[in-house]
Each structure stands twice: as structure tokens, then as C-alpha cells.
Image (cartoon, rainbow, N blue to C red; front, side, top):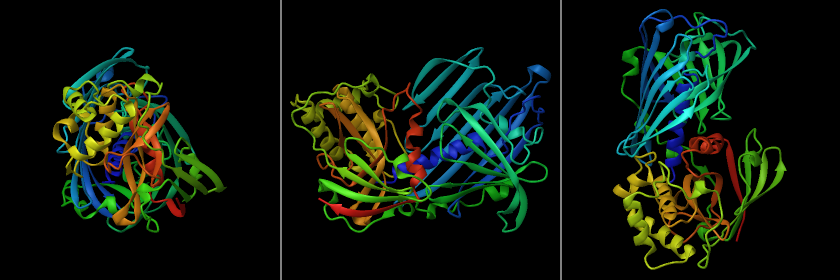
Length: 503
């Protein structure tokens, strides 16, 4: 029930990892990178010490001189367990760029069976980017302004040897990140050589370069290079576990994946003392500790949450329950919380039908919201943990999924009745596990207040056993939706909870 967000974020960070520094990263400021011959690279991906996947990349140059085009293609395959069910993720990225690294066109596909693949593709024509995003089999094309000099997401993979960094040197440049369909600022910082453990158990003294991207704040990938400037290893901390990627032979990359034995959903739970009727509580006070970080920088205050600072790494968090008002008016909010988007297809025929059936003869927005929460809980009878996240229209058709599918369908149905909605990511208490885990739910704006709804639980609103970390309208034109979920990625493995009191 609670692991879907974790898996979506796992996919996101792995995707961003490939975009911002799986291989050496740099920016040739004075001259273009040398046009490479056709090359092939295989990599293996480990999480928490277990093999979860592999990738294959090729790069070749077509033509010569100023008319040359550098073509790259990479395919990534990953599999892990979630509450005993196997989740499979496949990514495919192709790019075309100039020898100087300027992006010309790209195509990025994310497959997560049984959900339909999502595809983002684009072509640059002068000062414009023609961007097509396909969700639930329906493409949407927009024309966006394009800044000259923006680099391909894989340009840095081939430049470092031609223009190596010096210890202590920092470089930045703008590059397009297909996962977010946006331009982000890549920052690289070079360190000195350090003893590094390799896949074969041996250690070598390798040159370390830290790579980060503005679209995923708080995360740094560490790339380790040998004397020839070739990437040997990449590492990071994700969801409380170490993630390591090694350049290997094809035979090594294609060995049997062990990730089916790694249940990340269980491994990322935050244990607490048992909460009695936590989801029926009116108020819970927690002590929150995040190692090396101020929790108030991660946990937002709002209608349901207040924070009181204890010290540099801990706060007292008070969470209250706000009941669903049964006599309500629709709140006045920004249009993005009402409009149809690629993930929340308000105008989809099936979503409209579900919204009408759920609302029945109700006319009060509060009563409609309550009925919809119950309706989604009852209709999604197949609790499928093999999907990271499907769009609302696909959920309306298949009626299966876990917390993310419940949340997006409810949000879209609310908008179909002109009730503002947004999705929320955070932590929720799991009664049977005596622990908090990653979760997604929905909020509706009623009487100018954001009212929490959880269609996964279907309890008629929520108690104080939900801790909110971020929210998103999931709009097409707003900030990158996935960036809103970085706080959860940033705290798992570092956050500790203590229940102080329960009302």
C-alpha cells in the first residue's frame, strides 16, 4: 500500500543519475569534444549491495566536421520487489547532438508493465523546442522557447578526457533532462584521488567528481575515474541505501538479477512504538530527527501541521485531523488545481462517468468529496504493487493499483466536478507493520482550506497518522512534478520518529 512513491522515486533518481553523471561529466568551454568512433558500454546497477539491473549504451558519429551528428542510445532494465510483488522498469533514451554537445533531438521512453509506457520526445529548430509528451497513449505537443547552447543530457559522458577537471575545480552548465522535460543546471566539483572499492573487491586510487542537478536538489552522484579519465564506478545514497553503478563487460552486466530478493518497500519503513487507532486520532505530537539536516527545511507547516524547533536536527511536529465538511463551498485557488493534465485527465470520458456515479445525487462539494473517497476505495479492488504510477485515465479503465493510483484517480474525479484538488506525498502509519512508510494521498480545497482525503484507506478523511512532505498539482505547465517528491527521497534512511502524545 505504501511503497509506490518509493518506487516512483527510485525510478526518478536512477533516471536523473543517467542524465547528470553516470559517466564522466564536464563542459568543454573552449573547444567541442572530439567526435568519437562507435563505442558500446555496459553497466551494472546495485542497490543495498544487491544487483537490481543493468544498462547498455552506444555512441557514434555520423558525418564529419560542422555537419556531424553524434548519436547515442541507452537502454536500462531494473527489477526489485515491493511487498513481495516484482516491479520491472525499463528506460530507453536516444539523442542526437552536435559535436559541441548542443541537443538536436531526443526520445525518452519509460516502461513499467502493466501500465502503458510514457514517452517524451523533442526536436530543436532554432530558438524553439517542439516537445511531445505521451501519457496513457495520448500525445500532447507544445512549442517552447529554446536557449542556444543548452547541452544534450549525455554530452558530458564524452567530454571529460578532452578537458579534465582539476582537484577543487567547479564547473556548471545547462543541460536538458528528459525525465523532467526541462533544462537544469548541472554542477560538477572535482576532488582528489581516493581509495575506492570496486566490484571485484579490490581497491584502486581513483579521481572523484561530484555531479548534481538543480532539478533534484540535495542529491549528488559521485563518479570515480581511472588514470585515463574513464568512469569506473558511480555511487550515491538513495532511500537510505547505497546505490552503486559499475562499468563492466557485457557478460557481467547480463548475469541474473538478484533484485527480486530486495524488498525496498519493507527496507525503507520507519519503525515507531505501536499507535492505537492512529488513523482515528485527532492530534498526534511527534519528535522528528533527521541526521545532518533541519527537519523544518523538509517538513512543511500548513493546515494540518505545525512545527516547533528543538535543535539543529530535530523538531516537535504536531499533526491534527481536519474532518471533511459536509456543508462546503469550493475554494478559490489557482486554475492549475482545476484543469485537466496528462496525469489528471479531468475530461476523460471514463473519469467523468466515475465522478458522476460516485457523486450520485449529492450537490454539496464536501459530500461529493466524501463519496468519491469511498467510491475509489471500493472500486480499486485489485491492489497491484507492480505499477510505479499510472495516469488517472488508465486507472479509471483498469481499476487497479496502489496508493498512487488511488490518489490520482480521486484527484481527477474531484476536478471533473470542479472541486480543486492536488496530490500529496509523505509518510503514513501502517498498522500491521508498526511503522511509517512512503505514501500518496489527495487534498480537496473546500471552504478555502485543503482537506486531506485518502482513497487507499477510505476512512472518511484522515487522522493524524499522516505526515505531509510535499504536494503537487501535477499540471503540465507548472514546476517539474517529480521534483516535488525529492523531500521523501532525501529523508528516508535519515529520518527518525518518536511518538510523544496521541489524542
